[in-house]
Image 1 (cartoon, rainbow over the protein chains, first blue to last red):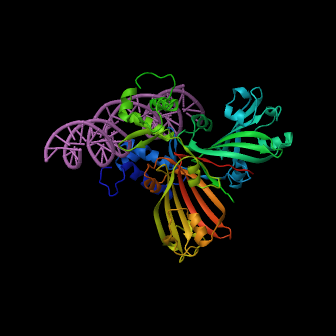
Image 2: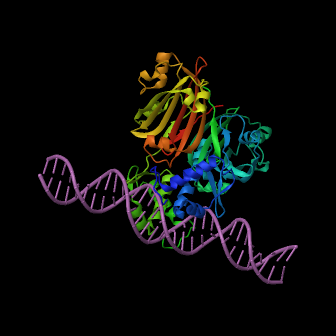
Length: 244
Length: 244
DNA sequence: TGCAATTACTGGTATATACCAGGGCATGGC
DNA sequence: GCCATGCCCTGGTATATACCAGTAATTGCA
């Protein structure tokens, strides 16, 4: 910025705050396009690289999303997801008036020996056993919000891949294999979206994420699933109600 | 990079991956200084701004931490914090062989009317009631890892500020006011560290964070605390064990 | 009218350069 | 031996410029 400043904030932050206020005030409404980096630079009398810093800051704050070669847009409000709810993601989205959908990305039968030890050991399998690995993409109103990796012991679910895997897996397991989930132990971590998952979701890797690894036990006390779920932190807010 | 590349990755990412491998391989050990941006630029034949992009990426990955005007250093391994554990942060750190400490940043008595409505309403207070607001900084081996905001209804805890607030507040409440926590409802969100908290912690605002808002109820079914805790996502990994 | 080619614009990457403020260290005076 | 001065290095900010690849609107031809 050409002029002097009262606060000692760097130019890119000042501009970011100004635009952030416009967004919060509703001058720029969700899904609307914000001015291009070059226009911001000209409007505020800063260089494009500085304007880019401004846009970076806004992305980082979760207020806008970038679309390569198209522009930057005001972000939709975050979707609430209650991790402690009995209801699954699908059901919670539906209740919130958001259209949930899933896409089966991959379904493979893999020898336990070729698997990541973390997974085969978690499922307590010998090397010659095999594992079913499903990757599903979860969407909300058509927008990718999560990737779910599910690992099932092959011996428990013969011919699993022959079933319709696009619907609820848990319903399927109960219907055809009489396996009902009872308890689960989960471990969560805040990370950045690994490129692997970002590619599946079709988004940039520079967004925060919540990763959850879960071991699910059936009512028969059998460990029947190891799940590794990756949720976008920029589109979801996570709620966890605990009563202790 | 001057030379052509096999992968189509941008230069700043390639260099970042190379340095990341050096860190993971132990060539660069925790707390050791990585080369300065200018040195990286020269070493890999890239410009300093590109080298800066590399360092940004590494910071974002949580592999290194920056220290203004001093350099960038390989980050310490993340500290595990079990959110679902009965043990508090202090106890968990101690068990992990890390020295926990706290610092009282501020302790104020504030009219409920002047408070953020989210808080006064959560505590179910009229505008003329008052609220105690404590801000505490939590450290692990001297490093700031969390900021805790605690809000207590004034009527429940007369003269709260006269007590020693540097120790465990819950122990104090039980000892002097016979208030024992029983249940809590909490709401967590992944964000970026707001400048406000970053300043208290003495770190940059460009790091991920976990914010938890908690309503704590006593054994007498009285809502006695609204807490707003902010944890550094770059120094902590959060575990949550659920058995349902 | 229909469709292909052009063009303007976008974010992403990269370079070269410049200045600032503060930490760390060597130097030099006392 | 002590301490202050000053220099070098650091990350942080900022400018100006350039090229790329893909989108989207426009243009122009058949």
